[in-house]
Every structure is written in C-alpha cells, then in structure tokens.
Image (cartoon, rainbow, N blue to C red):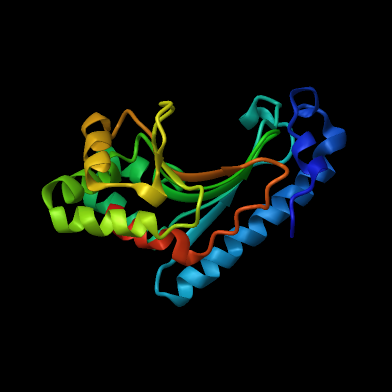
Amino acid sequence: EAFLERDFKAYERHRQDDPEYNALRLSVRRKLKAIADRVRKEAKELGTDLGAQAGLHHPYTFNSYRVKEQRDYLCRGARERKKLASFFGEALGKDAETHYIQTVLEVCIDDGIVEAALRIHPQAWWDGENLKKKLLGDPACLDEFCAKLRLLPGGFNLKLHDWRADHWCASITPGAVKELLQHYSPGEHWLHVQRQLRPNNPPPQPTSNTFLPFTSACW
C-alpha cells in the first residue's frame, strides 16, 4: 500500500506528541509491517528465520512522548540470537540476544523520507568485525560483496555512520569499500546500506533478495 502525503505529516515536530495522530500513525505502522512481513515470509522460504519488531506509534515514555519516526525491522530469529548469546557467555551475551543490537533489515518513515535499509548497529561489533575481516582479508569476497551492491535497485548507497560521504552502490568499487572500512570502527559506528525517498517518489519495496545476500557476509 502506498505512502500518502498525510502519512509524513504525522511525524512533523508539532504533531509528534499529539495523540490525535495516533490513528494515522497506526495505519502507517501497518503499512511498514506489511512490507516487513513480506520480506520475512520470503526469507523463511529461503531458509532464513528472522525476528520482527516495530516502533511505537503513540507518545510514551520509551520515545520521550514524541513519535519522531516510525520503523519496522527484522533481525536474527530468537534461536539464532540465543546461540550467539551462548557463544559470547554471560558477560557479553545480553547484548547479543537483544533484537536491535544486531544487523537489521529496516523500513522506516519520518516527516521527510521513507527509507529501506540494512544496518549494523554500533554495538553489534561482532557483525562489524566479521564483515571487516572477510572483506579486507579476502579479495574474492570483497569483489563478490561489491557485485551484490551493484545489483541493488538504483538509489542505494553504502554509508558510514552519520558521515556526509555517499558511496553509491551502482558504481561501487573494491577500492572505495576498502577505504570506507579503514575508517569503520565496529563498536563506535553505524554501517548502512540504504535508500531514502522523498514523499513525491514511489516507496521502496524491498524483498528478501534485496538484502539477504548481505546478511551472510555479516553473520
């Protein structure tokens, strides 16, 4: 279902704490969930079990009584998170078992953009370090990673944290990825593969084939 101009308005600053917009935000939440559910179903058919989570659509303590954005995301399934937590042990396992401190597949919206993305959380250092080790240590793996990036629909970019530089996936090179990874510090930085669209553009419609090839590089 398409996102409408009014959907973006529900997240404008003067409406973020207004409960009268809860119903509209709920309808947006359902649109996001429909996208995530489709990806989750396709992933399961391909043998990958993913867990699902969604952000609150109403003002509450968890969002400081402001709904600045709406998001739905997928991560490792509960079984895989438990295995990861068990591997790290009690000291580090609590972070590894959470649903958000992971590599996540996310679709989100705020007052200006709708976005589809794969993100490695800063605290998910195990995924970030695994990705760096594979890409910097194996030229063939790096070439394959770049080839997969170039196959993404137009408009996707590889981005480090909140840095201004964009590395457009359609023309990505191994050299550009290596340079980015030299600056990437798992434990400190976000890493994004993302596509952002404005209200007048068609919404992103990610499928399991859009991002799943990259999860294997991180996991």
